[in-house]
Image (cartoon, rainbow, N blue to C red; front, side, top):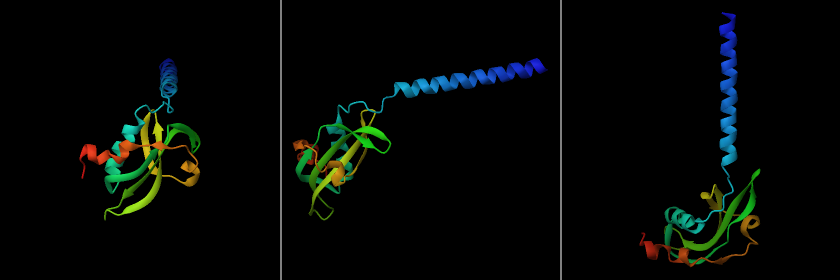
Length: 138
């Protein structure tokens, strides 16, 4: 009886050890900072569904992806600047947004502060200005 209990304890300890090793391996293989190669399309798709009126966007600019602190971690981010319309179809003024990427994919796109995106080098983003003309969204 004592031998069975000892074997059971040994098997339990072995199983726990193997589980710990496999979860460490999975975490080591997953890299949260994979370069977001399709970042423009992911931002366009997100803005199509999140803006009140995704038609006739003007003054659209975007940054190249860069690594920035995000909480206790570092992540690839992209800043997007544009002037879009609200539900009443009135322009709301220039808005900066910051997109956070995890494992190469857009995870979150939120309004940015001046500290996050204020002094960043933007480049024109004509794809955003033509977004709903090309996709014919309402």
